[in-house]
Length: 491
RNA sequence: CGGGGUGUGGCUCAGUCCGGUUAGAGUACCUGGUUUGGGACCAGGGGGUCGCAGGUUCGAAUCCUGCCACCCCGACCA
Image 1 (cartoon, protein in one colour):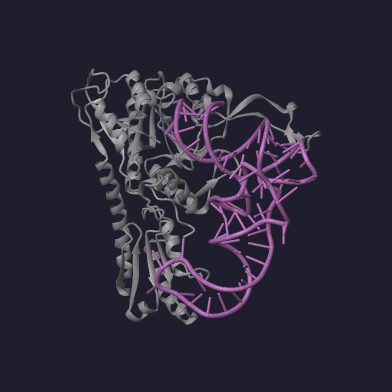
Image 2 (cartoon, rainbow, N blue to C red):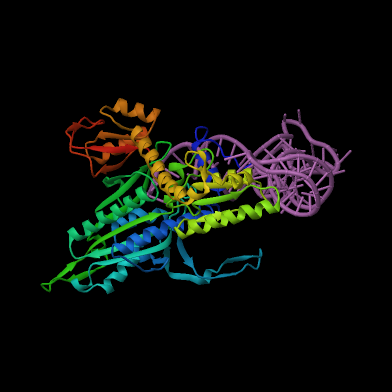
């Protein structure tokens, strides 16, 4: 009872905040806007990392590490880039503290001012392209396919655990190519890797698209993205992949000699996903009882809870439970047998539901007599008795089924809350009522996009890649349009 | 940075308007016992600079001034 969280219908954002804390994923830190990621939350992030890391390696990328600090001067090299990030940079100006003689404690030593101030990286394009200048001389050095796992800092005004924090963890891929086409292919390939990951591991449908000029990454020629719908109908950008053209190559003078011996600037890409995915995962599937985790990312896939009165009963149950645990583990299923006697079964049931463990097996004296176990699935809360001889196979299949079920559920939710709209009146009406994704015609201008944003809070999430061309007129200006774009309120 | 709200044991909050014994409750925690198929019960126990700093007063969680933090709503954003 004490752990109960507010319901989604009551207060969606409070539900989210409480869930993150009560499920032991993360908490606020003493530093404003930053978070402490707790072991259970970090375990989920580690599973995401492992999966993505393998996908990156399988597509030919290598990991490296570049410094946290970036010389201030690097930033001004690429005009759009500096403009995009200048307002949210943490800056290191000094390198020493000293004792405060007057008030006690310590103060910044004014004599220890840095000659050139350092920026705490909000993203690493500049420092990485500075290195690439030295790494690349010939077409033989290309493509250069690097990824790094790192933390970055963006000094945000308003923050929320996982969704927007001043410091966050992410991966950033930075590649260099000999040709424009190859760089575009890389950009698209990584977008597909992200979409594949979010669909198949996070069990969340995504819409692939390109950003409008307003929403484009600072310094990119084109920004691709995947957008996912949360349970409140708002959109969340789950990953981005940028075609950088030759912008950073020119800014950092990265040239290579082609086969004809002529010098050319290289073509770049960058792409990233962050701990924000944790927010997406939480908001997409969870319910009023707590987290619902897709089996493919759950740190604990199966929990076994013994029900007993006497020690002899526990001993007999443990024997069965340990046998299942090791059989399941041999099939690469992560199992926790919780035989703590400090908590009652009912308490444990509620606790593992809050933590989103996909499958629970309860074994009690009656089960020993009947040769059964009770298996409960987190996604539907259904329970059933299963013969012990069938248990391992049943659980294996059930985990797959849960993975599919929550994906399907998210998919139909997305479909139910996606609408085509042809007039601005309908558009506003729909946003007021249900929110969700709205496909509408747009005249292609930033002015119109900006006006709609001001009047309705909805933004163009992307120009979808898969949508067919269709003649129409802009819902706002009435000017001709060739394609519908995806509007939504966004996180 | 604007508008609103809140700061009281680990957590959720009452008490503040109208100043007055030793600052409360629920929950969590510790000990002992009974319990264990959906967040157990009984008994005992520990834990508080009432956000911080000043001020008014015989006396401040309560009144006054300043500051800080957090939350919600806007501007900025993955």
